[in-house]
Length: 199
Image 1 (cartoon, rainbow, N blue to C red):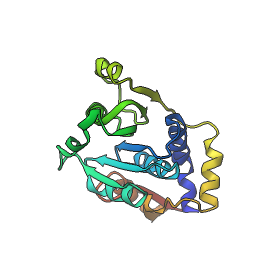
Image 2 (image 1 turned 135 degrees about the horizontal axis):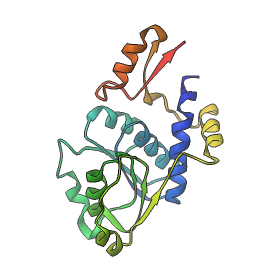
Image 3 (image 1 turned 120 degrees about the vertical axis):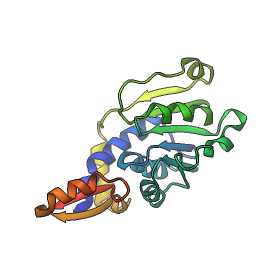
């Protein structure tokens, strides 16, 4: 039953996956490994991506992204030059799920995206200034995604039939009497991903 609480964010990420198009055999980059980014990793794995790299500025969410199917994780705060190896030959990745809502995360990914790459902007962090010349020259396909449409039913089925495992996302379950502690824990990215209250 705990996994049922993940249906809505999973549906959001399934919709993002549909916006990206076919993922089979694709090289996927996910920037931002919070709950939505981690679920995008899971969706990419479900879609048959050949390679899934997740990035974040904290190690704890990256560890969970790895459990959900990332083939590699990168802490961009401690490894700022980690993208350098993927810049050769005009880029490496076919699809970007940008889940941080951070302008720097989005723009820094442009150098490692192949010409014609699909960018799905999942994270919301306010308006951004983008290098339009790069978007045009590399023929990026920038796609928005918002909530979900018919994907909720699929999310329920995937969880009910145990076709996917989202339990690594649920990092703590506390009794309702500990609600204040639960919210404090939920606000600490170094210790938690999804915190639930038990009634």
